[in-house]
Image (cartoon, rainbow, N blue to C red; front, side, top):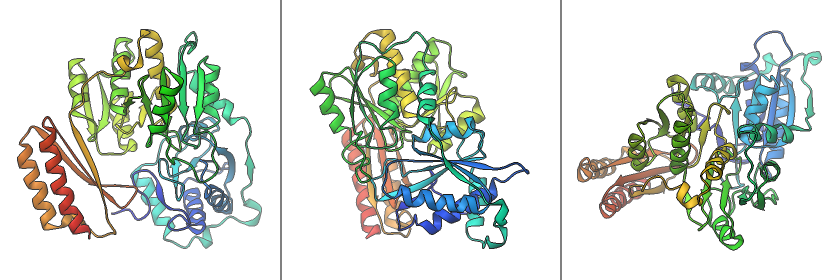
Length: 447
């Protein structure tokens, strides 16, 4: 059964376009009913990022949840991993993060977490989708059983303490000048404060949200401002989070970007040496560079690949008993600590290695030379461009030309109307030509 509302990371779309107050209210009702189990007083934790539309969606969801008898705990702007952690810590039945992650302010989204802090399975999402398309009038709570809503103070301190505890108690960041870019998003308060408490010399940027500037020319998808600031301040490292802080990329002291694949390599090797890997391997997606796979093989570790999406990475980690996984884009999951990607906690693990080795970040975070990888996006207005005969022919020809010396990955985005074309191989010119040919065919089909 194809899914009507949920993509690879919750429900996402244009605020007041797809993500309307009516939909938010209905999601609150449907999710609330799906997670009512037993006679106890049910409750839900709701966090959000800094988008203007967050107010509209938050209050609509409060109306939805309270109308089916659920109590609501509002925590305000908080990182997605903090909401997942608080859902479990506060013994809630459900957690909600209102965010469109790395998208610009015009979009928003709804991410849901179960009582243990994990994102929902496909089956549970289908149950909620089914309820979304039904009339729920007869399932609303009686007047005396309506839910209550309240704002919760002090949750920032809980997350800061949680993050600090992922490091050894005697480890300090003293002597490190750290530029932190919070993307004008959900982490703008908690992360600079946590770094300061750990002893770092903190230079914060992207910490002045105004409802419109989330992810705009800042954060993990636009690291140019961070690179410039690192060089300007002669900092040791730059950390860039995205709008809801579930992904991270780093910048070394020279201003060069370090992606999620290199971060996985650093943490994997460190954890292997310390005997902290639960299995001799890690989990990553089909997008991760072949260079990472070869590096891990040299360390005696395997790379298990999944479809794109951190929820699929986590699913494989849980099924296979792995405690480290992630994506090239910077979603790093450390299941010893968190139930979802946590950009800040991942950055702390790398900072711990930097402090242990006492070497520049440019050396610590360069574990392998990536193979040339070309990724291009083709935007479309609907339909199925991938079913076009010319597109299929271009893809088939491309695979023959790479002839085992590279790979192709063509997929539809789960969060926006875009087809992503990725080619990888040892010959950059060949890979570029193959990708450009497929992109051209897709462009014509999309038009």
